[in-house]
Image (cartoon, rainbow, N blue to C red):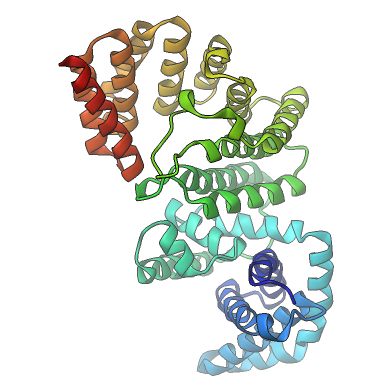
Length: 417
């Protein structure tokens, strides 16, 4: 019998394929999504005891189709439409296409679902939530726990997102050619946000939310399989792999943060580093350079260094300079300042940080003050560094980051005595 964890993984993989089959044939994303969630719940309850059926996707399609038809029939205004749908497209006719999609990896339908969930009419928070629910197969409760909000709040967010998609007349099909590039950028950004929230949680007791990073990497793989020649899609997957490879060494057994310079690099995931390096090397050689590729290249330079002191900081600074030219952004300037400080000394890095203190987009962000504190400490200005560490600790809502910043401040206080 398949283990519970294996069933959960199977259902998560099949969820977008089953949803795509129903949405494509019934033309109602909102109702289809509800029906699929009910089918997934039924499978999670029944399969561990009864065994996985010979055609898991067919079983889910059949159950979800019945749920969907029942739901449509229960609505007075939709009674005639439900009858026509049931007569025109029996559930049996959907099973074969779903099985075919499963055998092929469901790549095209997964891509269409990603575009639909990242519809430009939705807010960024709604795009993330809907992507995790519809394409990632996570339950509303799992998504709510990941973002530390009540389940009812997340349910309302997802419901409003689905209603907005329906009201906007979005259909289950690829965007038109003139919309494709912009929509793809939104999809990539949503996956990037999901990964970042998993790698460094913005709030809460833990530094990581591994479920989110794993889901972001899985979806990025799906995107890459569908668009293998897109350099930025390849760069995004490479960036995730090269960054997540360091996760095992980022925390101590008690959950406290270990900065990059102090990490035990033998604990890094070498398989992920090798795969990510192959991907970014290939992308840079054949595709126009883009921001995800440059970020992946920076991550690769970090990962290539066997020891912190071996890091090629001048190369990283040069890559950040290219990235700044391509997409001017205060967070990128912050990374550039760190690289310049490591290559040329703390004074050079502090000079780059100075304009950011007046930038409203970053002036109240804890990372600016944490970096400034570190560079001030290196420069020997311990009093100013102490003030910046304290301010950074007040601004962050991540408990591991708070503890780390407080510990740096405490060490400075001891050194001043």
